[in-house]
Image 1 (cartoon, rainbow, N blue to C red):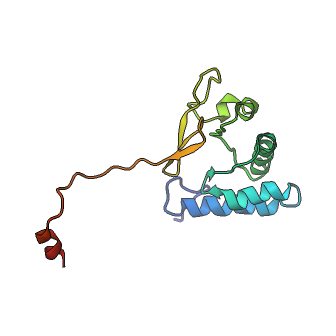
Image 2 (cartoon, one colour; image 1 turned 30 degrees about the vertical axis):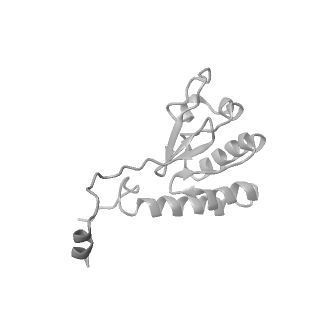
Image 3 (cartoon, rainbow, N blue to C red; image 1 turned 90 degrees about the horizontal axis):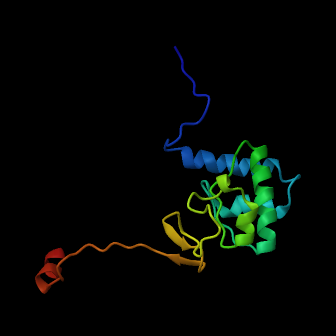
Length: 147
């Protein structure tokens, strides 16, 4: 008896490569329909399923709609959108935003973590969380022992 999967397994070792291939294929298949900016954003600004792009506010809303459309053509639904522009966030339905960006009446925008780097949306700065292990200071004996 032979079994075949109809879909790719989530969490398989090959999942990141398969997602990357499918997304790039989607861009290539639609390069005649969408602008070079949209295709290049997919080819150069995605890491697995995270897109990190920096564009002017005016471009961002257009890029959001175009990325959503090109990926829809390939069978993808892009979600978890975030921006440091309230104008851009207003153009994105709540259900497609990052979970902690729901109510735009708050004074502070959240800190979002992508690929191990924290992005403070309000100040548009990156933060890194580093945990140091408490170890006693090295002495001369420790150094000579490691040689």
